Length: 379
Ligand code: FSX
Ligand code: SF4
Ligand code: F3S
Image (cartoon, rainbow, N blue to C red; front, side):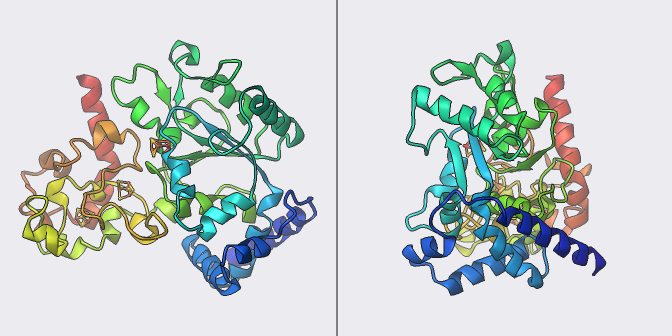
């Protein structure tokens, strides 16, 4: 209780300080939501769900609502480095605006290469102005890995052909907080897959400041917005796991919160895509599901306005929230070496009744990644 009392006080004074800063939007979030047919009741329901997602007790809900109302006080710069823009798409590509995407419209987004109207010289000028005007106040969101080989020359951006590496270092130096949005920014992603000719790395490997990794290829809109709301609320880093991912989103294994888990435990597996087991929604382990080695909240928060998630749609998890998943989780439609995983002569046929239970894999997951990393190095 004491912990929550001091947390509550901290959030209250943080929000009070923010409310004294001038607003960058003429419209309040309430008006904006109303114009988009989002009722006050929907907004309150949404704030309650975000409060629960952030693992905060229900009495924080009004503070979460206030944090959202003050979201426009914190300037945001969003950089695009080596990636596919799927992270931005995850947030904005909805057929009707969700509260999450509306909040993204409401924040003070000073620079975002795919969304802003400016181009060329003017875009560069906007970025420099934002860095200067909001020095040490802005949040930097980075999407994409950082090519570092040949001094970053594999990625140049804008009229001055500045390297992504240089742009990142420059922008990060005056940022109040840095979030890596997506697996590319967090760990390098597909660009960093072996043999990684561009020397792509995650942001935290080239920046000496703390970086929060919002992993996933792409991460859900909820995990992106939740990270922002958490920072607005407390102004500090959330509790992080070993890979600097917020624990409120990445503490649980996909496998432990999976709707197909009962079938796994019962030994009921899809033997072939499209078979009767697939129609019945049985476990996808034998079709290469990497849910047992992956940490994220996808089954709870889902994607595309909460409609579905990979396993719900009938494909196994690819492990997209884990470091080096392109190298360590493949082949994506085959189980990875069971013997190596379990240290036993165990196959997918009897995994449900053997050591592939919660704790065995829970301990094994990260160890397995490093085992595979070693395997790759030895090649
Ligand atoms: Fe793409 Fe983002 Fe994957 Fe990477 O998402 S969805 S390749 S995490 O940086 O654009
Ligand atoms: Fe779900 Fe995959 Fe685990 Fe099966 S192996 S229960 S599909 S996470
Ligand atoms: Fe990625 Fe697996 Fe979730 S592939 S989106 S971590 S279900």
